[in-house]
Amino acid sequence: MTILNILEFPDHRLRTVAKPVVEVNDAIRTLADNMLETMYDAPGIGLAATQVNIHKRVVVIDISENQDDPQLFINPEITLCEGPLHEYDEGCLSVPGFYETVTRPEVVSVKALDRDGIAFEIVAEGLLATCIQHEVDHLDGKLFVDYLSALKRTRIRKKLEKLHKENA
Ligand code: QAP
Ligand code: CO
Image 1 (cartoon, helix red, strand yellow):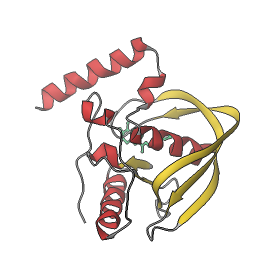
Image 2 (image 1 turned 45 degrees about the horizontal axis):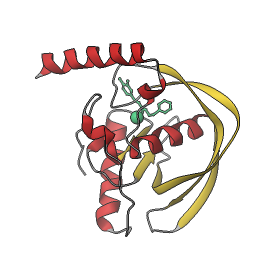
Image 3 (image 1 turned 135 degrees about the vertical axis):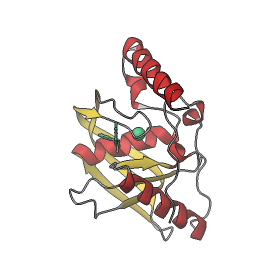
Image 4 (image 1 turned 60 degrees about the vertical axis):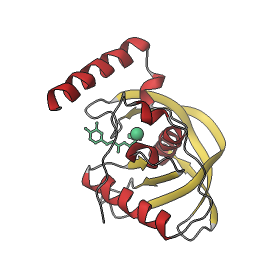
């Protein structure tokens, strides 16, 4: 397995809209396994293919305490957003070192394909619902910093640009 390079804000490639997966084959399963390894290595709780510069609609999530419950969503679609809004301190492997409060619906239904290409649908709430919405945003070229004020977003961008220059 391979640990993939994670793009960081403000890399414009994070703004690419990912294309649907047309066939769930071994190449997609290998991508999903490499994304899981990359996420566990970070460590993180969610990763979208966009973040590793692969513009296909694939998301991996593991919100379990022991990081032993991987969830794969191929072509995820949020079919229902419900209920009270929920505030969560979100972070992102593509925005390392920054956490900010984002408000999103507390419950979502999500339809997707599994690693055998079989469709399934789940109702998610709490952290899982937040994480699914955050990762589906990535597939549409959207980042959690887009929900913040322009001032906060600019501050984060400048700090990361400085770090990237120092590390170059
Ligand atoms: C998305 O984010 C998420 O800044 C997944 O230095 C996060 O796995 C959805 C990470 C929170 C909902 C709530 C972030 C690792 C990991 C960092 C992540 C960092 C190291 C973020
Ligand atoms: Co993210």
